[in-house]
Image 1: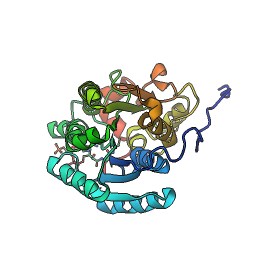
Image 2 (image 1 turned 30 degrees about the vertical axis):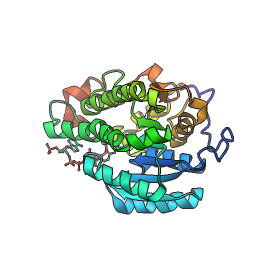
Image 3 (image 1 turned 45 degrees about the horizontal axis):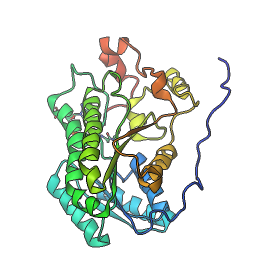
Image 4 (image 1 turned 135 degrees about the vertical axis):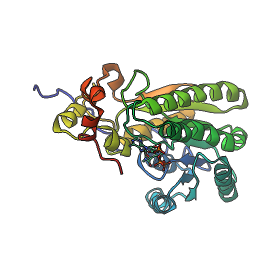
Length: 295
Ligand code: COA
């Protein structure tokens, strides 16, 4: 195979934005305990904001909060809540307001995913992902909107690209993320006149995340294919999503709302399938041998 001419380096830190642009602002982030949403939270905190991170596992949230406070010098509170439960989310918002007195930015990031074909995916499994991703996003918007309106703030919803074309074994997430994209657009249109913006970040395959770990085959061939997946020569990095987040919350994006920002190094323009096709759908059992086993 010919060597790649160019691989886009991961930009670890930028000096593009003043590190105080979010000073005095507060971020509320669901799913902030780990992975992409943790990175997004850290990036916003690095630019001056305090934060509340929300999730199901209090021990992980508490640990992450401590680490984020240490790395950014800002304040971060852990709040336990399942986004499927509106009452718990409202309590999480109340705790955030009690602590900081405001919410300017919201990241709707809590999500669930696994690979399963329609033929074996249970009704409950489909509903579970819809409830976490789509209904969880709606619940988060409902719980935070009054405060975000008051602050003339902004939403970022973490979506995906896999539903732009039909991705086998991803019916639940495809339906759920399409719903998230649609929800964001309506939110932008309804709330724009109140000074609120709403945008989606759609990450492509991002290295070192739970999603990649769960969703990609572990075979050497598949792993080698992953590096070639993007025109810019590498998988995405959490840093790539962080930079996009700072931009979209910043005044530099003040006239951008209702948009989906795909952050994937151009992968979507070169759509490939990560599972062998059609063998995977003809013999779903064979997939179990090449993906991360179910817990
Ligand atoms: N394949 C098929 N079905 C699965 C599955 C898998 N790998 N994992 C879960 N399900 C099904 C369960 O069997 C259950 O359906 P059933 O009652 O008909 O058996 C349904 O989904 C709910 O699962 P359960 O584990 O009870 O729900 P939960 O609310 O505790 O967790 C997830 C659901 C999706 C969040 C869970 O898979 C999870 O914890 N994932 C890790 C986090 C994650 O996905 N992060 C995002 C990566 S992009």
